[in-house]
Image (spheres, helix red, strand yellow):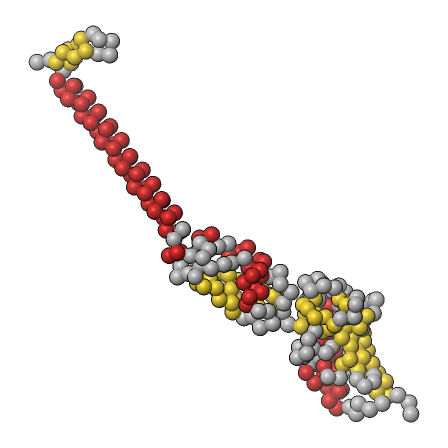
Length: 263
């Protein structure tokens, strides 16, 4: 028997029971799907809210900050400039930005920051190695590393005595220009040679001369083949009587020439 239903206009119509049943089934399935989607949305929202609250709890905070590799720079200085602080949410720690700030310190050459979910943040640094000294405008001896960067004020125990002659150093963190050859020589000198070298001068054309203690000049010429020239100088200094030296010429490192002061 057909079922008499009213359509939306209010008029009645006869519909086959199977069609009516099918319509009811479709509507029921639609309601079920909507219910499932609402349930899924509610679950996702609950998870997101829960995750947000977890990140704001002490369970995911920075508990400890450790500094490794620092000798000339204190851990307090490094942590202070990093911007990291205990109690900060781990997910909000910007490791790249913190490492970049740490590298602004004069003595720091490289820095990395790693966070762990147990609350530990590790800062690992590599410090610059001073190889020479240059005087500032007010006469203060400043340490210079191999790249020409001014590291800081020379202090007792630094162990650096090689002076860059005719060079003025700026504030820590600045660069001394035009002395790359002199700095390379300074880094190549052995400990024994450093005690004999009073300073390194760079001429306008880039050629290098070394002032010796207590007297004598080393003529190195252009800043090329410097490892061989330094090695040649080391051999001469180890084999030749150092008294009455005028010059040691190692422009051609394979045939060094020693000239003495006339008596």
